[in-house]
Picture 1 (spheres, helix red, strand yellow):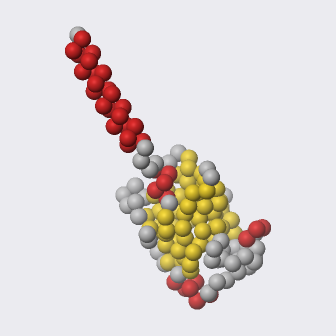
Picture 2 (picture 1 turned 180 degrees about the horizontal axis):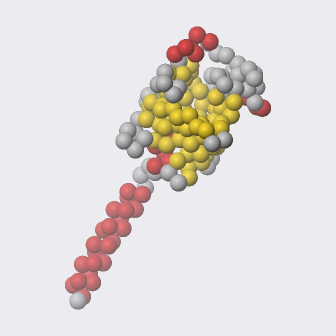
Picture 3 (picture 1 turned 90 degrees about the horizontal axis):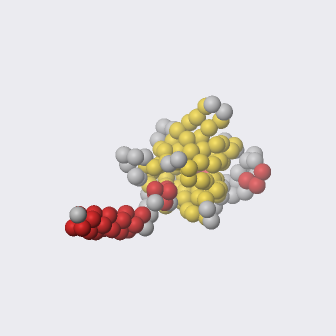
Length: 151
């Protein structure tokens, strides 16, 4: 009986150490960090963004324009709501304070070309960690984009 107890104790100690080491690595919420190429619902590139951690949330900043938007240089966000009004699009945080809840990131995101804020969810594709599934919502309607990791 004593040998059985000792064996169980050693096994559970090893498993606890393994679990603690595994938990020390990056969590699933950190998979969103990095540089992404945003694409519209048809897969056409729109911009480069970087997603980074700020305090207890995540922000998404435009670092460059791609595709048809490249020709605009560094446009201002004309007609955009509130703090975004007439600010340069490049360098703009289009999402601030995204929160990780129930396996997805939730918050609001600005679409500079539509000059509108949308509720959003973002999650890394379970089959491909280099794809970020971004959904924008207006009421019961949504639009899905797939962004590609570029770093």
